[in-house]
Image 1 (cartoon, rainbow, N blue to C red):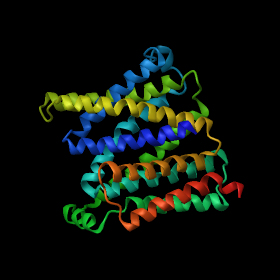
Image 2: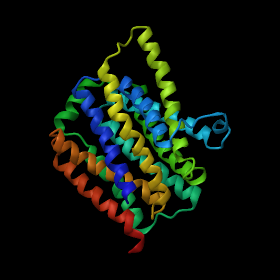
Image 3: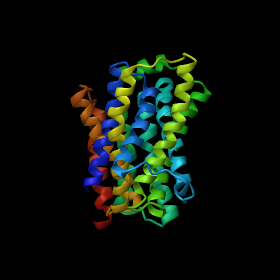
Image 4: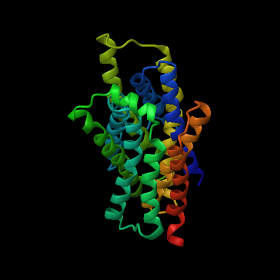
Length: 298
């Protein structure tokens, strides 16, 4: 249970940290890149050494780690693009609704069951995410005027939805089939290293071409985001490995906990006002968590 709490709190911290970046006018992409570099350094310290070598490259899990890195950097940037073109609410809903993908895949790949009250909990979880992330009327009107959506813009949230769900499913698949206590840190560091290399190449190109200017606050933001980011994934993998529930319950539990905690934290720290619909979503999320966790025992 401590790993579940760690995953929820640390992942929620990341969302709040990115909101703080916006408040202090810190460019998100450089912060993301420096965050992944920090993750590699943090993981290497935890591991006792930088684990990537010729032997690691030949392992079965290394290619999955590289794919995870590609998804890391892509999804973070898709969230930013979706927020700009379609609105922050759409980005939030697309990301959190993606929990349905690993749930469906767990039923198909691992013969897990989602029936009875547990099925009701999964369905309620989807409604809870939509209600919790639903913007107030004035925000929706502003975003509608601000965003003239074209056909490509409509596809971006769909791509984000699929990417986020596939990332959760990938992490779960690898921890089931490849990850153990000996290679856990090496796997994580390899994934973050892949994301860092891709992001750094793009960022250096932007700096050299003067399309972007380096600022020390970008590096500082990357560091304070990167350390919790590493341990958020570390906790998630340990939770999935030791969870008393099946994947079809564990991932919704984790995602709903993040929605619940981050929403309440944002309301307290950033004075974000919750509408009646948002409050209904938070309550529904709590009910969904109970049904998913304990529904099969009723």
